[in-house]
Length: 300
Image 1 (cartoon, rainbow, N blue to C red):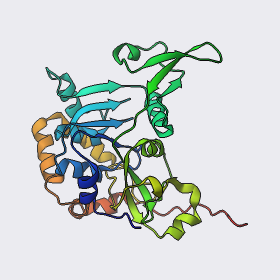
Image 2: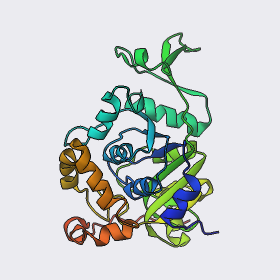
Image 3: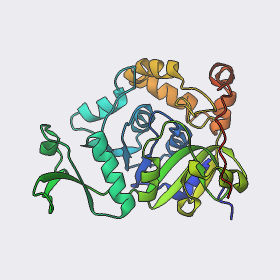
């Protein structure tokens, strides 16, 4: 059965006020298109979780979507700070609650959630002050060695949104290039939306099965959204828009300028297709040149 729906319908059905929401992808395949639709539908009181809440969550915080951020690093990669995030945290009283872990602490939380375990042990946090400010970082004694291990609780989001290069109509999603914790976050979640650059027949998926990181059996909706990860990148489709990240430093620093950006490029467009049509230079500037990978035989 086809799970293909529009972005508007996917967000309307699966993302609700007060949800714990994950939009994953590590510099690569970050679904800005989904975040923009969440903003357009004016979702509120979300707990946003992500290893690296960069520009995508800065926009959602500025739009008033977030009540809490669960994360391991926050910043505008290669360009500076996240100023909407900073304003929300540094205001008195703060308008955004935060819960901070290390990178691997967040990976461990998703891994525990995916495995349906209550927590995950790790050799981490020794010599840091994170356990002192985050009571969810605790410890256990290893039953085999007697050593003390840090622990973090499982994270089971209400909904996870991942961007992939391609999927079939049933939601079997394939990713190549830089991976993050998309698989773990998806398996940990109650609901999963997969956003793809390209919809392909199931025969294409079956012909290259090792690229399938998310099986259709855990996917609730498939959205076909070319250029949906811009300004991040999709390997083989388009490059990272480094100029955008540099420009975001000035845009986000001034609240009025940021509000004007949201009015023009989020609220002011109907969908991602219009967003791309209004920037015809994107394709010429960022479209990837073909560099095909080699083939292998799955014969028997």
